[in-house]
Image (cartoon, rainbow, N blue to C red; front, top):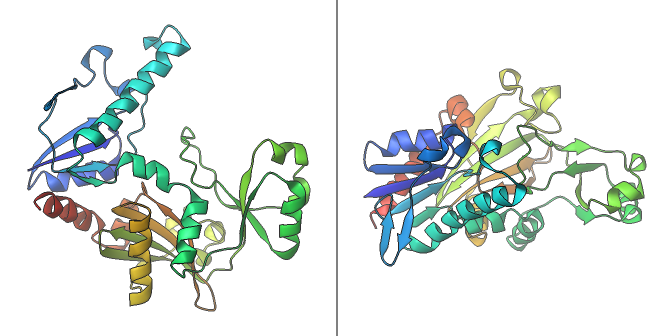
Amino acid sequence: MQILILSRSENVHADAVEEYCKKYARVDRINFDFDTYSQERLPSILFGENKVIRFLAPRAVFVHHPRISYKNEWFTDEIERKLFVASWDSVKEWMESQFSNALWVNRPSLNNQSRNVLRQLKIARELKLKVPETIFTNKLDELRRFADLNTVIIKQGNLGVHLEKKRILTSLIDVHKIDQKTLCGCPCLFQKYITKKFELRVHVIGNNVLSCKINSQVSEKTRIDWRNYDLENTPHESHTLNSVMNKQCIELVKRLGLVFGILDIIVTPQGDYVFLECNAQGHWTWIEQLTKLPITKTLCDYLLLSGLE
């Protein structure tokens, strides 16, 4: 059998999947960071009737951040650059259509659709998961009414925007420092701040669930957002969900149309589990290193075994 990987050359998660799967299957890979190629040696791909030149039809496809990048000097104007990006985006769309019978982890179109956090929260509520009180608005009066009742955070909202190695982290805000003109031009996602006992990073792969407990409240740096990494002072350990939560997490990922999803969940001092969001393109290797959870193995075994069905 063959496995196809769509990613970027510096992606350590794709590297881990490729290294494992190569022991058992043929693996082909396309990296979409084209600025690492010479212009004459870009990947050669031809789609025709019942024909694909570049690789054999894969039984399984792993997709992880195949963002397109390029060298500016290749283009004489902005239209050329836009057409280049659009053409390579079309390749991903064509592959999804051409290899429709393959196992996709995950389909690029469904990765994009799943990003909407408001949709995620709606599905979570339908599954009886607790979620934070949330408002998405560009109306300052509505935000201030919401904030009168709550300590409020602002979130990026999983918009799928590449920020050139920068991050927008969850932050506590003072709504009185926001003016109507600023908010009017940029609707934002606000939530009630949830007091934490600890946090969970839950990896759902098919019907497999691997959960990591992040003791984010031990370090002042990670209390609001554990992505302010302080790994030496933030213990990570494996965690077992109860059977009800296990089923809810699996079902949420399925309803989003995904095979692989990584859920962020808060556990409150009262022991309540509060769902925050699901990332279809999440990272996991640092958790694997700290906890020995077999995330890569479980993911690859799913690719390999499902590809044989």
